[in-house]
Image (cartoon, rainbow, N blue to C red; front, top):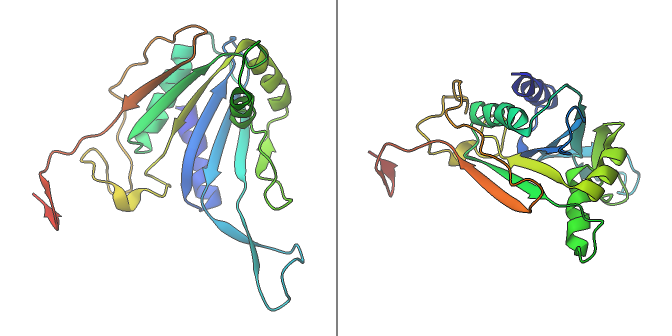
Length: 213
C-alpha cells in the first residue's frame, strides 16, 4: 500500500521515534490528503539564544506531507489507513468526523481542531512547529471549515515511542504486523460529528506481575 510505504520511508529517513500519525481529508473525491507525522525528539539549534558553552535544543517539528491521488470514497481511504496502522503495529485507530466550524454556534475549539488537522500549528519558542510540504493545505483548511472534514489518528509501535510497552501477540520483533488487516472500514455518519474507534492486536498469554505465562 502506498501510505505504508510513505510512512516507512519517513521513519527510515528521520531516524526519530514517532509519537503519532494523522491523516486529514475533506469529504470530496480527489481532493488532496494531509499526512502529519508527530516526532518525539530534540535537535540542537544555532538560534544564538543560549550561552556559547551551552547547547540549545528545540523540539523537532512535525512533518506535514500532501498526498495527491485519485479517490472516490472515504471507505477506500480508510481501508488504506487501516492497513498502514495495522502493519505499523498500532493498538488502535480513531476516526473523527467533524462538521464545518464556520457555522453559527461553533465553539472556538472546533476552529482550533480544524487548524491543527491541516497543519496550522502555532510556533514553538518563535520557531516553526511544522515542516510542511503541502502547498494546498491552506485551501484545504478553508474548505474543511466550510464543509467539514475527517481525521484519522494512530500511534505506531514500529518507529514509535511504544515499543517498551508493547504487550501484543500479533506484533513481530520490529513492532510490525503482517498484512492483510483483518478489520474492514465502517460507514461514516455523513456530515454528523462522530468518533469511531478501531482496536487491533491481542494478548494470548496470562500477564502476571513480574512476568507472563
